[in-house]
Image 1 (tube, one colour):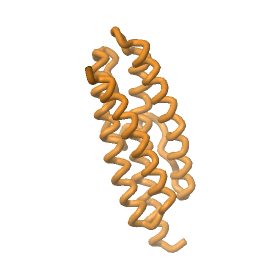
Image 2 (image 1 turned 90 degrees about the vertical axis):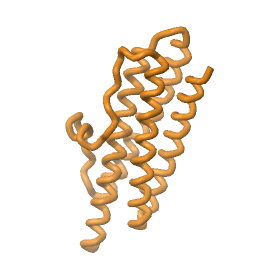
Image 3 (image 1 turned 120 degrees about the vertical axis):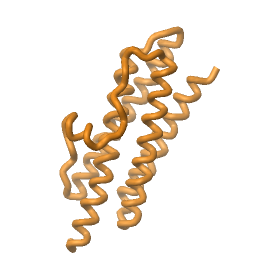
Image 4 (image 1 turned 45 degrees about the vertical axis):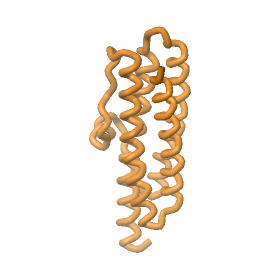
Length: 153
């Protein structure tokens, strides 16, 4: 691989590392809210959040493996991931509606991070990474929609 190809792979992997960090943070927040949600819609929200965190969990492995396929190391540990994400930890004391709004914000951040990564990958001619990002954008948009719909009366 040429020097520019190595640099390109590093750039793409760095953007994917941000995606991994955002995904992991949204996963942790969703799982935590699943445990701590309360109120009259508890059962439905509890199940919705479980569905979402299970889907996100599967994607985390796919993202990390794509970083490795680019011959880079996937970040690991709360410190490394925390330095790459702009999504804040959840607050278990929030009301159910505020938990959902917080998750909507997290998904919106993840979507923006994915769009940036998709652009870098596309510019680099890395169709596999661009495709992965597109699939993940669709998933986060669906999660966001379901959360927003759950907030509507």
